[in-house]
Image 1 (cartoon, rainbow, N blue to C red):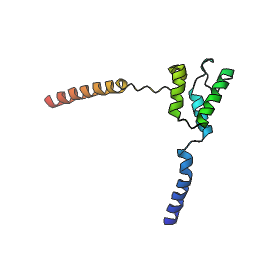
Image 2 (image 1 turned 90 degrees about the vertical axis):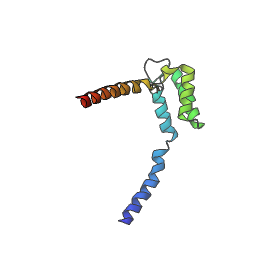
Image 3 (image 1 turned 30 degrees about the vertical axis):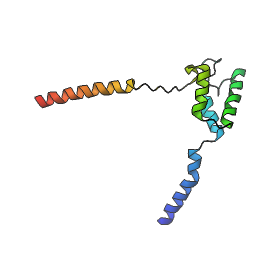
Image 4 (image 1 turned 135 degrees about the vertical axis):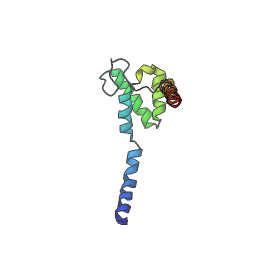
Length: 118
């Protein structure tokens, strides 16, 4: 049993870096699929046939090869073209989460008081 456990742990340790660390090609594919082409209508950089998208893909590839983080790359493109370039914008609007929770809490308290008083 210990032999199988040690073999399993060894295999996990070998393949763990492959799962944790992305190579440049997978980062490029992920980022180019999350950036919209500014001249095409609704196409990502990955799918766009335009020459402008070709130039943008070259810049994106250089950024990845220079070791710039994904967050910094997205901030660069967002600063340059605005939020509309991002296919998956991450809004941190906590009101959308807190408002329904507060209403549920208020109704829960009202229900609890009604049950205790009756």
